Length: 233
Image (tube, rainbow, N blue to C red; front, side):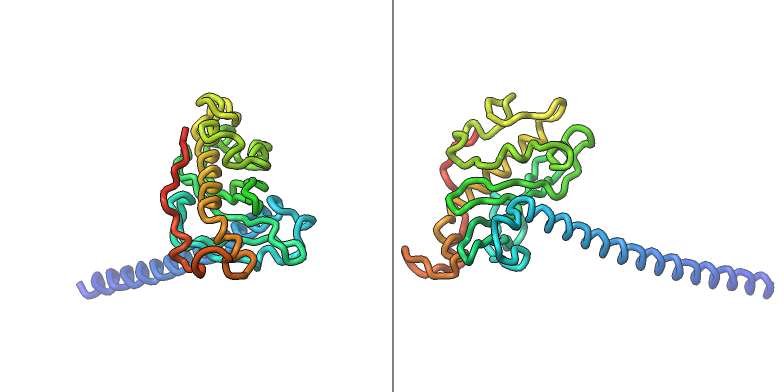
């Protein structure tokens, strides 16, 4: 009987040691993998920033020149929004803001949207998504140049109802076999422009790092994204 108990005890101790080693190995692997994923995501984001506003168009440190704006349902982001400011000899030439299209075919589609001070699109890049390979993934610049069709667009170009895929009366191409994905990206870009226009005066004041010359001093409350009466398609 004593021998059986000793055998059970040894087995239990062995299993416990194995569980501890296995758990530790998994934890270390996850930590290392998480760090690599975060680093790769940061590199992809930085690469996209310089694709939207190339170094030839600004001479400040784009990665470090940032400002913080309040969260907005239009951008579908959680918490304050960090935007990047591009400057040429100190003069703001554009900002790049993050946005999320929450209605992609397979979930959230994360974007970066570059906007010039006058409200035109400088460029758009998709930095993360789970869309179907060979169909919805054509929103990636490495798969097609579809996102370049946003360049030069604004809230008035095209008219609000035309911010849609051609299948739904819009001006933007859809993908063969995939309409939901491009439509989601189009709406996210449009909402980014709406957010920018709604807060344009204050955003520009913050970019210039000088107090607004109109109205009271700029405060976070001034940047609240009240509903804007923009006709949707």
